[in-house]
Image 1: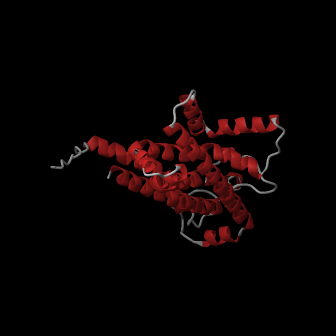
Image 2: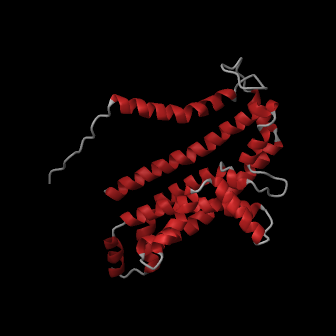
Image 3: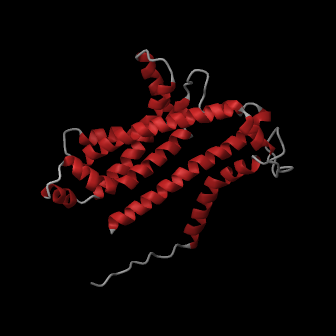
Length: 271
């Protein structure tokens, strides 16, 4: 059988310029933050920097409050991602494979937290904690982050499940496999890359989330809150820029990995 190749049309010059403008708008500020992390000026942002130095990296790495904030952010992100993997996978399985009353409403409620501004989610959670007389703690931060991490895992999982051919499940059952064997040998291999990609994205989003981390755990604060507190101190701005560079690097890696896994999973699903 002859295979036909579809060739995409060439983009116009206007579209190319608009795309370049969008990319620059998004990434030039990040490039400036990285540049100022090496600036020898310690009081304000001066462009071009009067000199370049790496001394602020040593200063940032030697500060215990930085490591404390990083440690708390990583713990919150790991717990939030774990909860999101469980709840998001179960929700995707139920909504992708079964029909029941209120299915569309539940689907909307699941994706709503990612559409709402973070400040709205934070206010809502704060009101709920106060009404239930729940003290702010590490776990209240985890619950806040899990609300939007679930959405990321759910979206990845439900999209992959909807592309999974029902004939594969029927064949597995016809061959004598039970529900667990079908899940382990048929569904999970198809769903694995989507779940891993969702987990990586959820971790990246949780790690650098600001709004819903307004609660402190004891005397500790998460990394974004630490940065907001340090920005009011002019002489600490170079250290804050260094920490921002670390955040960019730590979130860039899982996002790129998630993108690669999603593309690879889509390619395998089409074959």
